[in-house]
Image 1 (cartoon, rainbow, N blue to C red):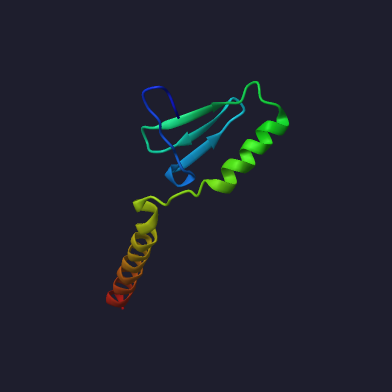
Image 2: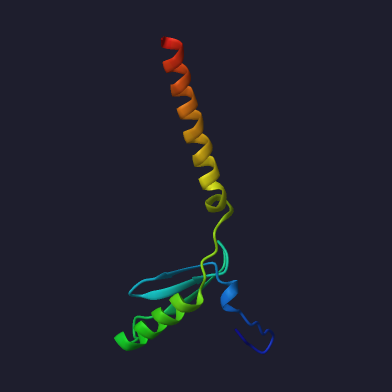
Length: 92
């Protein structure tokens, strides 16, 4: 992005998410910052090129929740199994 008063370079690593639709490509830098590339007048070949370029270069970051979700799932399953085993052993 460049103008007379400001200039900014955005690297592929700065992008956290992307959404591709028929109308536009949405490149997210955060939950509140997005760049929109209009695709309505793009040819099918151009859309394919943009799609490949984005999918090749944007590495989706895992959120903090997705990183710890397996741990919570494991603990939940463990507690359920322990509870079932205790209820079965106390019933006999």
